[in-house]
Image (cartoon, rainbow, N blue to C red; front, side, top):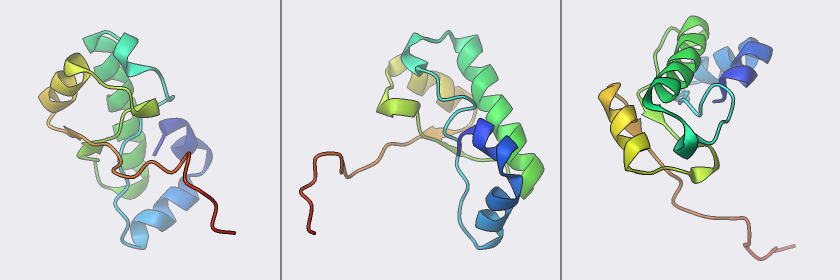
Amino acid sequence: MVGDWVTKYPESVKALADAGHEVMNHSDDHAHFNSLSREQIVADITACNEKIAAVTGKTPTLFRPPYGEYNDHVVTTVRSMGMEPIQWDVETLDAPSIY
């Protein structure tokens, strides 16, 4: 969940959490994390975590970097925060249409 979206639609985020879905961190403002310093990464992820926790009562433990961009610096920083970076396992942008 992007933090900006949590701010705009807290009722929807709460409904998702209340329905049993895990609300994960997808950054506060969808920045390019490969170009951020450690301090910027920590600040961005922390801001999003705080927004999610304020709405759901739970702090995320998983982080998916925007654009799927990550490097060793991003992974190390995320893990130092006690979180685990994740990625998707299916790319659908070029999937053939079935309709």
